Every structure is written in C-alpha cells, then in structure tokens.
Length: 322
Image (cartoon, rainbow, N blue to C red):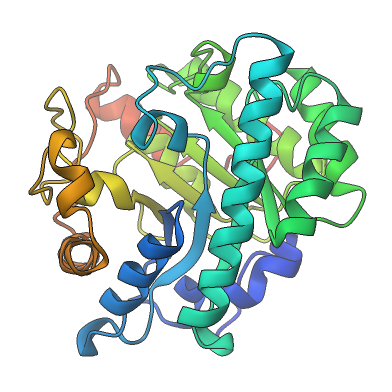
C-alpha cells in the first residue's frame, strides 16, 4: 500500500475496515440494513465470485427504518415518549444485526457496524453519550450523529472523547427538519468544508454527506493527510469516496418514483410481507453492488454550480483552513 493510498490517519480505529484503500480499483461501500434476514441476503450476495473480495466496509442500522419498514413519513420524532421508543427500537435492531453479522461474515471480512443516533438523542451531550453507550452495549462499532450546528458538534466531541469511533452526517439533515447545506454555491461549499474541518477537530473519524453537490463530494473524498473517509448519499460519485446504499431501496420500489433511487427494485410495498425474502435481497443487492462498482449508479445530482464553479469547488483543499 502506498502512502498516497493509505487510509487517513484521522480514521483511527476504522482504518482496518476501509477496503477502498487496499486497491486503487476498490470502492468502499456502506449498506443500510436493519434485520437479521437482510444481513443473510446481503452476505449471500457478497459470496458471489465476482464480489467475493467484499467491497462493503460498513453496515449501518439507521433511523430510516422508521420510514422503510414502519411506513412513517419522517424520521423526526414527537416528544420524549416517541423518542424513547425509537431509541429502544434501534438498539434492539443493532443487537439483532450484530448477531447476524457475526454469523454471516468471516471475521477478517466483517464490516464495521454503525448505529445511527435518532432524533432526540443528540438534544444535549449527556443524552448523546447515554445513547452511544446503549448502542455499543448492543454491539455497534461506531455511531453516527447528524449535525447542522455547534450543539451537534458538542455531542460529537463528548462521544469521540470516550474513544468510540464517531461519524458526522452533514449536508441534508432530515432529523433536524431538513436543515442543510448542499454546496450549490461556492460560498455554501466553503461553509460545508468548514463544517467538515470542525467535525474532524471535534474528533469525528468519518463523514456521511447527503444531497451535496458532486463537486463537494469529490473535494472532501480526495485523499488528504488531515482528511476523513466519506460515504455519500444522493451526492453522485467521487473517485476516492465511499458510497452509501440502502438495502431496502435495492428491492422495494419507492411510493413515488425518484430519478436518483436505485434502478433495481422489483416489488412494491404491498408485496413486502410475501416477497421480501433473503433470496430476493441477495439477487437485488448483487445487482446493485455490481451497478455501483461499474459506475452506473448513482447518477450525478443536479446542481446550481456552473462548470467553472464546479471545477473550482472540486479542486479545493477542504481540509486546510483558508
């Protein structure tokens, strides 16, 4: 492994999992999955000969479960009782997925398990610490925190100070009523880069960026001695970036067709009870991973940046203070 391709030192304890740095042809993947039977289907897909050198670095149990499997319209939660219910639910899912991953993946190719702190769990640092502890007790290797302001960064600082790998979610932040920076202007991109540096300095060891311009994704993902590994969602592709895939979206058609969703689903929500099986998950995830590795998925998002502005943003060094 050359120095240029080495995992960023800030990745810390996640570095051994980052498959993308093993080969210049490798793409690091994060897969959102929630139940043991989904892990069974995913693991079987990755036993396919052409995918046997697993590109999946991370499995995340995310709060999107509330929308996919439970049919809610949002991940925003109403009141303390609902927030407690959601946290209890996700902790139980993390324990379930942990058990399935230990069974289905060999230890030397097992992705790290990332737990998503739900709405309410980051209202203050003490709550974030308590939630992170519950997730690690359930088997999580790392946690993710949506951040849109300094209060979120304080939660990151508190968790990271315990030594637990902590990823920060920037860009579109659905828990926070959609507060976002998309990087669709040069100034907005600069603000996103400042947030990324702040996350790094708060102790984060990785980023998830959602619905940001592809130019921002490219700049953040470029190897840098002081940078962080990045997984992107609805943010196009970046040469050295990781890509986030949602297992449910690979199989189940969205209620409203979206241009940027995977092209692989074959069943509707009404068919899930009968047809959402490990065998179908294996088939559809195999196809989606192949499309992703071949560069056919995802599509580049629309942006308000012009050609020159996109080139300027993509060429920026986001990890050094201006």
